[in-house]
Image 1: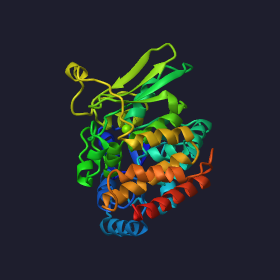
Image 2: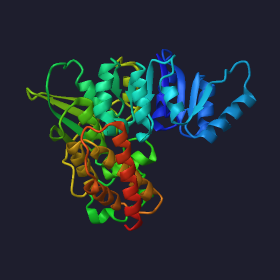
Image 3: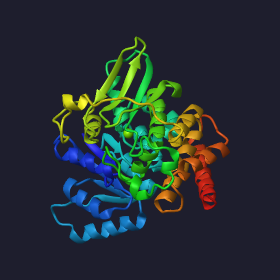
Image 4: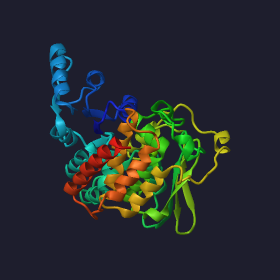
Amino acid sequence: MDLCVLGSTGSIGKQTLDIVRSDEDIRVRGLAALKNIDLIEEQIEEFDPEICCIFDEEKAHELAERLKAKRDKHLRMPKIVSGMDGLIECAVWENTDTVLVSLVGMIGILPTIEAIKAGKDICQANKEPIVCAGHIIMPLAKKYGVSFTPVDSEHSAIYQCLLGEEGNRIDKIYLTCSGGPFRGRKIEELKNITPADALKHPSWNMGAKITIDSSTLVNKGLEVIEAHYLFGVPAEDIIVAVQPGSIVHSMVQFEDGAIKAQLGAADMRVPIAFALRKGRRAGFIGEKKLSLADLRKIEFLEPDLETFKGLRLGIEACRAEGTMTTVYNAANEECVSAFLSGRIGYTDIADSIEACMAAHKNISSPGLKEIFEAEKEAREFIREYCRYA
Ligand code: MG
């Protein structure tokens, strides 16, 4: 396989390269990152890609200079590109057949679409393209006949449960959720949570933004929308089930009442490897396999939608579809960055998203232009709103 990793310096990107190290069938042809040139410089030396995009133009220039200075006969110089054009050039690079998209945010929408149009198989770890443009991307993947494999652990689980079930109607999806570090608390107890408190997530190893989203359960709201578009299941048939410990990664119930579940240790490398290897199960890469003792601990709880309003809003956005899912996502992104920089409190995140969604006039089946306009509108709304929060 000839792979391009869009977002190679982030948490998923690094874990992807961990798998590549132990799999000689995978060659890295392209790498892309926002601006972490120290790490990507190491990755270039190790994986020898043909093209490398640094989204930040100045940093891209700096990287090119560094590489030129130490180029020798053994290391060929990759083509260095930047900006959205560069990201897309990387995504459609001729010598790749598979693109793993692990960018964070809506920045991944255009590269995902262009990679599909170029006939690349997609391993999708970037939620926002599906959340905001799932109604465009999923039909496109079908039209171009490319495989589209989710990397998110829950969606990988659902995908795995659906193998061999072609033609069987899904009755319900049980999307599992760890409950986050503040599970069991009430709203008054959430008010004074600081960024440091929220960054201690119990189950998974992941980046700062998604860690906050996991604690507010907005991450689960985004995942409900993601499941809706990936698997074509209506919002009301996607049930969020809190399963502390993250052992059951999700379940599917069929018309005859049978439920299939996928279980495993909470290690992102497992769903990443499953997606990269296109369903071929190879050597164990995690730290510890599940044992019977782990299975004994499984219990399911209902989510507290009153305290964790961010999840309820996500379910509402999923029902509304259209530009509302973009507004939910973009408003959240702005709120999380405002929270991390100390401009708003923890519970202001969901309150501000709610206000933003209430102010938005939903457009159904939006094109890309309308999606990006809705994003802009939501961000402007939140910036203004938070100033007075
Ligand atoms: Mg997930």
